[in-house]
Length: 239
Image 1 (cartoon, rainbow, N blue to C red):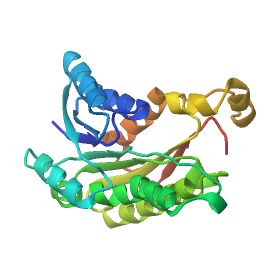
Image 2: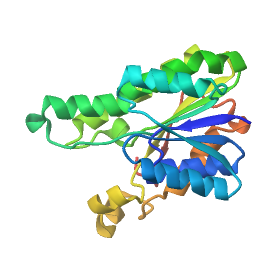
Image 3: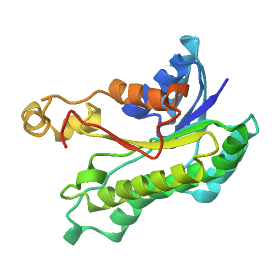
């Protein structure tokens, strides 16, 4: 059974991806840092549904701590599917943005890509099969006012995705990013009312976590073996 690690799995998109992968027959490692109760509830939900799951807890911005946690996971075998889903935003116009706001978002959304992915690579390469998928954002493509830090982190993630895809192209491993637009989550519901969504999104609705999970599930499958180095938008035709 292939093993999948989903970082930031306690959030709505991460949880939807975990459910989808478990339903596809993967053993899912549900990652969280602070929201451990949500991760445990999701793990139990998957187990009750006859899926296979466990939890893992570590801070993806702590390189040393992440290394230790991943080494422990690798004792049970390679992780062949990685979903870099963890992320956050701390918005402010750049003129008023603090160094802490800048560095925190770069750490969470970009440095975590290295911290989590790098120690998984050699064991994955030895299996000659792997899927690395990072959840990005439309902001990394278009930019957005008040999100210079977030846009920089996500755009950096796109470059890292394309470069790593080239490095492992002959190893049976694909590397892609998904760039969602407005997705109906608790966080986005606070920022976007129905009128604003109609004005911004040609399809005039928000996407769903399940739709993002379906795309991630396809990219993680055997059928997507010739898709690599891509940033795939899922945004209702926004741009």
